[in-house]
Image (cartoon, rainbow, N blue to C red; front, side, top):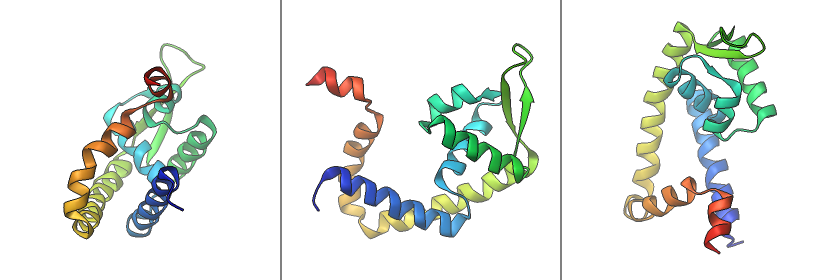
Length: 139
């Protein structure tokens, strides 16, 4: 199958499998840990918007990361109905390890197709930054 969507999906599935095997974290877990570190006291709604992970999947990821002691939920000072998330010290250590591994994996993937990937990266970044309303407006 030569569909662009099929290709994007296969690239994601393959790279995610490589990442998870090497890092022992799923890509969504890595994304959430990274964002919670970058945005201390972020709430789940903000995290959904930044991560592009659907709400139910995100809730599962947060439960798993919290269960491992890598993030903690805290009641918001401004709104007691809202949980804010913070990375723990062990979560920060895990994220540092994962970042080192991710960098090594990225280097290996780039080496496989360095010439082609360097040419394609700007186009992939453009596609990744698009959202459906922008595409509909351009049509």
